[in-house]
Structure formats: C-alpha cells, structure tokens
Length: 186
Image (cartoon, rainbow, N blue to C red):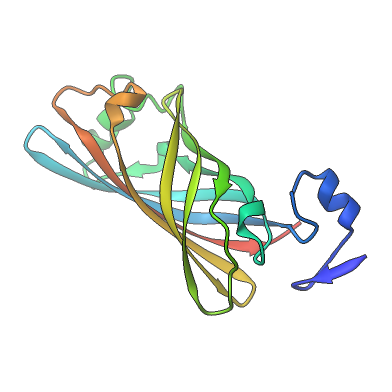
C-alpha cells in the first residue's frame, strides 16, 4: 500500500478502478452552483441552479488521468419569477420532468499538476447531455487546490437549440458558469 495526500491506496485497486493513475483518488462535490444567462425575446433571463454534484477520480499530480462527471439538477432552476421557472422547466423548454439533469461526462482534461494555493487553467472535453441530447463539448476550467480540496470553476457558452431546447423566442446562445468544490472521499 502507498500513501498519497492522506489516503492509503493500493496501486492494483486504483488501476482496476479505471483511474488511469495509481495515485488517483475519489473526490466528490455535493453543493455546487450553476448560474446562467439566456435571452428570450427581448428579456435577458438570469438564474441559478443549486445542488450541482460531481464525482471524479483525480490525481492532483496528473490531471490528464482525471475521469468523472458533473450533474446539474435542472429541477432546481430558479430565475426569481415562479411562472418563468415553470416555463423553463416545462415540456417545450428543458422538460425537466423527463430530463431532470444536465450531465457532463469528462473524457479528457489537459495535463498539468495542481499546486497548493495556485490556480491552474486547463480544458475539459467530454460528452454534455441536455434534454436527452448528447454532444461533445470542450470548456475552459480553473482549478485551485487548497487544503486537500479542489475548487473548480468554468464559464462557457452553448447553443440550446442544438440540444432540442426550442422555446419560442429564445436565442441561440446561453452563457453558463459552474462552480463546485471537490472533497476527497471514498
């Protein structure tokens, strides 16, 4: 058994788990937040989605070995106006009754190493699923290692129409910010 970042790990178990690195360890996030901005007709709609979760296998010394997924519970979408929230979650827009989450499955992360207290800029590429439609997406990511936890932030744009979100009068661009903190776990 080898020790790394306070964790006892068997190199054989790490490889069998598909971590890609003998030092990869499980990290999770449970209380992340997404914010968004999207124009509908002439109104700029801003809102939040609380409860973003993430589950990854992460080696702070080899980010390229990282695998995992991030889930955004669209049922928690809030814009400050209840009727507008209902419309956004409704069948003609996000259809959260049938597709409650947007999910990003990480396929690759540009390499690098997390250093305590420093922010590293990298790129995450993977499969993004929204409203049952999956497309390849690459997004910029900033990661900061502090006290064994990793703060993760991304900001990106995408076209909701590409994912079947065809709400009348909605624009072809949505801006999204996602933030969460990964904590070592089992």
